[in-house]
Image (tube, rainbow, N blue to C red; front, side, top):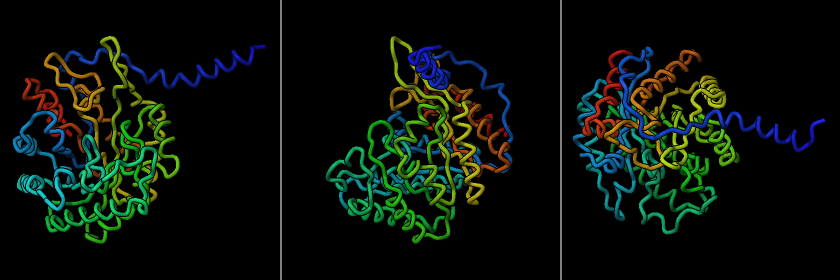
Length: 384
């Protein structure tokens, strides 16, 4: 008979197989190919296409924000997501600087785009995701804590006051079709911080926005884990109240899925270790649950972030002149889009929209001599 130790070793090996099947070890910079020119494009039917525009990422990439946005708005997509970044708008107490967001909204209107406006307040899309002005947070949020409305009443009050200012300013703009409240609302802030917003905290923000404007839907988004390690980590860290997709199903009118099938873990000896669980059963199971829950609750679904830029081991995607980054090559812009559109067909439940994540990066690449990311996006617009 096999020993208990041998049985345990076999069990551990079997448990490790799914994780190992999702690991990739690659040189991070890969040669660019013409594959993106030849991939088939899924038909999107009623699904609207769009982008997110991140002012912090524009700065990190060294781009001119207005020129970048105007160039992007020239493409024939329907929908753009803009962010009201609290720390950019209120850098000093009661000193509100709305010019940047005013201009973005007006430019999108002139281009005939519909707008989802993320009003935050605490978490808004784009690194570092947390945009509370320093003067509204005298002490750092405690690691491992739930940020609840009672102990953090002053922060909640300030956040709702900011949301009120933003919604009141823009609610008469017909181009704005929805408000997004928080970003991945109740998940920890990546690997950098382990505190989380309590669902009760977020509900008070949602209630405030609904009262300010009952005519527009509320969008809330969550990260779809695409690998077993990420799924297990997300479950463990949010087990007391559910992850952001679960909370979105409870509070939102429109549920946004953030889909990143390939990302880097760490680099070693000139190579990078990646997780790629894009076709794993763990991702499929969770995705099917989200679609089924949306159908049961009569909620609309969108891909709020479809990966279309690299996710490497640094916060600003590298922009090498000698090739493209393994975590998202130009052909993956199309492949990720195709996969998400196929989900809707499989579930017989339409996606309201698909928002590409990484548009600012495409402009940086184009300025550096590589038009292939913009080219892949253009092919989708033309052929879907």
